[in-house]
Image 1 (tube, rainbow, N blue to C red):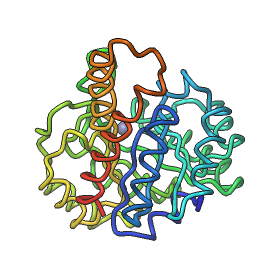
Image 2 (cartoon, rainbow, N blue to C red):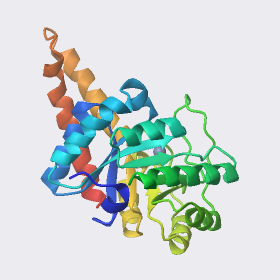
Image 3 (tube, rainbow, N blue to C red):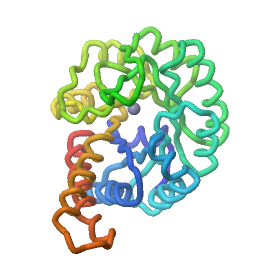
Length: 271
Ligand SMILES: [Zn+2]
């Protein structure tokens, strides 16, 4: 069942959102969600849509979502481009994230408002970011800045976004679960902001901290690196083991199983 971000966030206390990069990981996530009876969000980031344009991957993910027995949202993650967002909407995505977190706040606000207007007119949800979640990847240049609760209230009200990403200590692309979370800041934001909150960079969060975030009412938990590592590391092992094999389809099942296991592990915590 294909639904919007706004609607899927009403179906469960916290919904897991996974970055996917093609057919194999996406279908594994959807099948695992069906097996668990959980809603799930499929996200494509810039690296993904630079490789497989949203006009191609969008309809594929939308078809998977429509055929799924559980609610599935198809979401464009971290876009800084209005043109890319328009292409995603035209390709069937039910949700987009406009990321103006690197811009001066007034510019982030103005651009987010414009995206909300055009997306809502098409029945598509919008996520935006206030404060800035940094990256542990040295190839990505981005500032990191904790979210100010008062600024978050103002930004949510002025823009009318459906979900708000906040920075409370997580870092994108962490390979080990050792992020230091400022729960007091999360509590202060949560007390003031009615808009559903999103935590990015959650692969780097300890399991017990993920549980705590859910208990505190975070609506969407973004996970990318943990699944990518499960897929890629298993693929490397498989290829090295199957020395006579050349058929790529023979290489994928083990990686798909690894993605399913990791998604299941995370969805058991995030619900
Ligand atoms: Zn992110």
